[in-house]
Length: 277
Length: 353
Image (cartoon, rainbow over all chains, first blue to last red; front, top):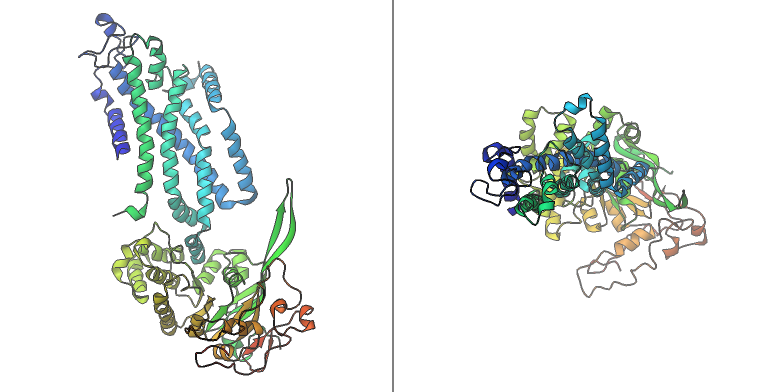
């Protein structure tokens, strides 16, 4: 329940960002009177940062970015993971063997180096092309890359669940009735695999948010997006003089990732029909 | 006459005929680059029998003798290695192999399966209504607006109530779940139902109810059963004829009373002797067979029962006995040296003397 409350809180903040934020995220007017690195005050509850942005507003506008990264990356990862894991587990044999070796190949790739390299290269390539005009192209690249490298755990869980479930007697009963393979997978196996999948996906959302924060912290984030990792990147050098500018986004990351991890537990219970009233 | 236990008189109205069904599993030794076959498990090895319309053929044998594999191969839940299965005049093993969907569905509608474990055979995320609607949806024989009516009809047929439809399997007892399993099998109005140990995972107190239900349904719907069990008492209760399996083969097949009173195969006799008698003072005598059932990977030469058989002759180790008709028209036995065709003697407690 705590997980759900935290996530609801983050989602509400993300949706209502323009209403809640006291300033525009790109408003540097504080420079004119308060100055940069101003301590928290009534007008700037979380203070201002190195560049004179209002920290509270930036943190609030970071929420939609974080959710977009987490959900987007896991959407990509789940689709790939469930399809590959599902095929692997259901068909078995040589295709299973090949697909699992392929999955393991993705597991051993040092994801961050690849993401950093691709984001950098892609950022250079798009300059001057039509792709540059797509809003948040850099952020989308990060989302897609996190998805492309985040699916192996999902594929492995899906495969394990499919292997277990396809032997179950109720699946054989469906075959006896004459249900098609598609019916068996979509109506019998997948719903019964859901609890495990939902848990790993919810944990993966937290992981993706954390990963994006890391990429941004290293300075490879989307310069046009407001993200918590980027706030840390901009402000860690003034950690001793203006700790509020680093603490606020850190807490936001902490709350969101913790929320998704707790939610994962809660969801696995909610999916259990035995606990349905 | 080697008609695989099928008698000429009944050939006309036989509804299910299994011919020389085999299911062999290769035993592979996995190498780095390729796997080598090091042996073969002969789970079902040349099983032939036929079931007549309206009767119940009991298939008995101890665990691991291939009863369930036979059933699963008949239903093509596993692909048989060889042999054919005829349902009426259709070769359904061929229909399933070719996979032409309308014909497969037609075969599935005629032949249904009741599972052993009602705790595993119902989708835990589906309500009973969803479970019972599935066959209606797959076969499309009824328009969707009549599905609910049919579900209620099915529930009442198996002794459940309409309101049970909205519950989940975990809210039911084992007996009730098995009733749901029976209702699902009957949803498509099959002619033949294969019951794979339908009562062996139930409490003893519920077994009789389910067996009575099966018998009542057979009488009212004219069903034909292939009843698989290792529980001889339930087999005797429900069967018209009984086939005894040992190590993947049928060793004896006869009318139920003939088999239980005048068994000719020594293995059948040993099985009957092993039926527990509810009397602590009963003399169990030298009932226990010597040795273990040999591995299906390494079957004995000749008659598969000869290493354990009290009446084995030298020929038994060399020549495989064929299942052939013995004295009675409805009695076939695969033995070189069968027991004499006399009734077995029971003492006052019902134990075989």
